[in-house]
Image (cartoon, rainbow, N blue to C red; front, side, top):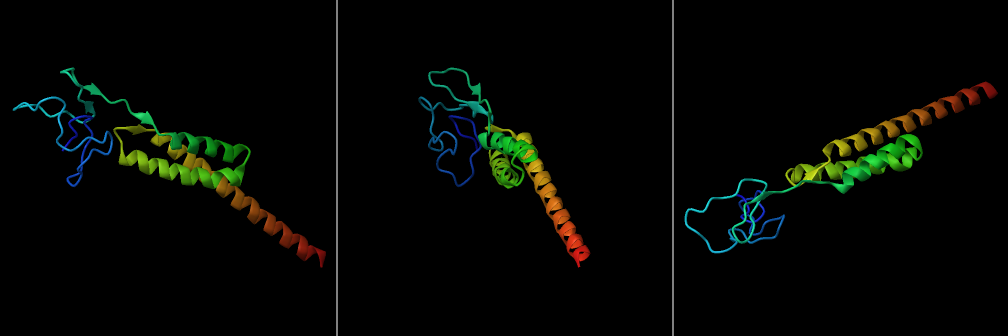
Length: 141
């Protein structure tokens, strides 16, 4: 079932639309028998205006994840890598939950990938440091 006001998909248990807050089954204006239901993504307009399409918005957390991913590879390595992964996963889950209203899954994925690359680089550097310290310790004896 779809919301009569904004056109977003409703679950069977929902009493209110999670997007616009409209009561399930509420109509703009008087109810007319044989009235057509709106397609997904269409918004009902008052006073008989034709329905308009919703414009998806870019999820801001996806942009934050992308910026953190870039910073993790350039300046702040470990300090930005882990937050890029966390914020990116959260953004991607939110985008997948509301695909008609939110975009930016590619940016969130890019932030996650860059975050993991920076974490991998840091792990390699730490491992190399430990090996060098062991070799120096063995040679000092």
